[in-house]
Length: 270
Image 1 (cartoon, one colour):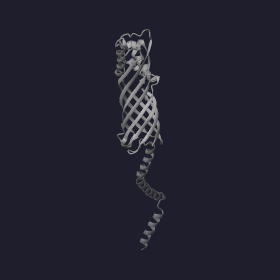
Image 2 (tube, helix red, strand yellow):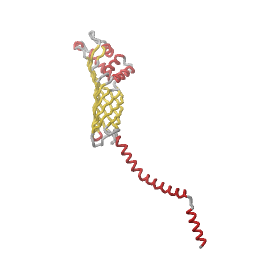
Image 3 (cartoon, helix red, strand yellow):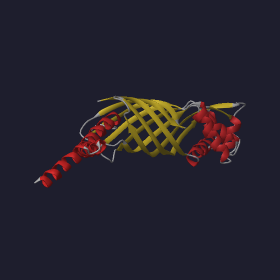
Image 4 (cartoon, rainbow, N blue to C red):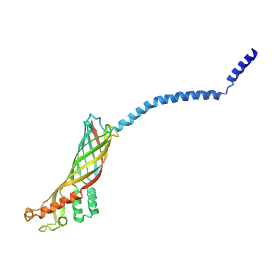
């Protein structure tokens, strides 16, 4: 009995004399396991909540069954600077209208491209004066193929209207023959270019109501209507004026492929 009691006394004494850091380590390990288990259980919920908080400010489009109206301004470089409206419809459809003008800096881009193609000084002057200050109207329609995302596929029609004044020397060069100008050194013309194209875009809403849209696209001016404001007596004298107008129109359709980049910013009304 005394041996057993001594052994028991020894065990109790050993337990009481156990180093404190072992007890702390055991407790720390227990609490670490509890906290880790809590994190594993709670973190998916937190992640989903954070995902919603991050997604909402950048919600790109209304839902598939809602409509929204965007009023925006910006540039379609190097075609024009202006503004317009875009309507988001149910079934992920989008329609819009843009209008604006061609700044001189953009007109210089077209003129430089004509020079790069070796088109000659007459064509370069025609392009620079025709595009500079021209009015542009664009009608577009498309679809957002991915529900809930701002990715857009659009097709569009573009009309570019201008009334430039050209030197008669440039008109003669483009026509390939001199016209009977009767001493005139410049002549006004009326013109409209008809363009068709497509566009890839992406829209986001960084803060409630603000819409930012970036896109890349291509416009091809497939047809042109040109009329020189010459006296009727010149037209009556033969087909030389009509031939000059046809040569001018073919100049635009020959060099009429225009790649562009657009950035628009505006306000969404839902």
